[in-house]
Length: 334
Image: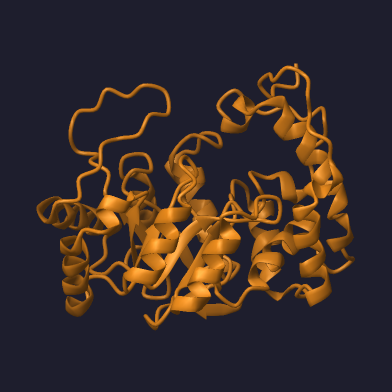
């Protein structure tokens, strides 16, 4: 397993990491603690040493799973996130967003709780979770984070930006104006913006990228068909039919990346690692076979410059796929 550094922090992470949200949130199926811990340890055995979670994942369950799996193992690097108030009552409606609390007192409290759940004295990568511009422009937050860095309580800092509002303005602003080490963003061969702009900003400012959803919610693993059926508790079941129909066609356009010594799923990871600013890729992992395939991606044949650019060109051309025009319906396979 290859390793890269998060910005100027000196924190080295495996180029293939593990996003614990698939195990802790129930959006990708249900896992007992024993099942989840077994998968985490299997990943460690395959060379994955970077594990990313958040205090919101299962209201602390993701952090607790990492404690059960690894304790304070110094050979494992842990990223977690803060900013959402998971400690106050909340009237949840659908996938609505919890309130943020960016006050110094709350950040310190959230940090203490995360450290306790993780069973660690230090967090390797501490990230603001889906911050808006007003939070990023709050000097007090970053003065506190600098204190934590100087004290050694956290080893690197950054932001994790979500999909709901685009996040381009937030990502470009924070890369240029704050001393962060890395940004965690959605980026993959099928969804190239705003990821391309984030990588350019990272390159210009000495910041690293942690790329999540590298397979476009599993599409770039190359196994979906028009008849694919997702389980009742799988969030992909609720995507519009157009996502599946168009996605299956797009995947066929990038099949040229497959080789006898590189699966399409591995090529999707290598497409991201072609950019030196990408320090680690976080596949959505939910079984042991994926761990074996994705962990081996780090040492699979890298993409050539020509292969990389060809995928960029395909994206710019819409992969030659006509928009799906029938009435949208959930992806159920029914």
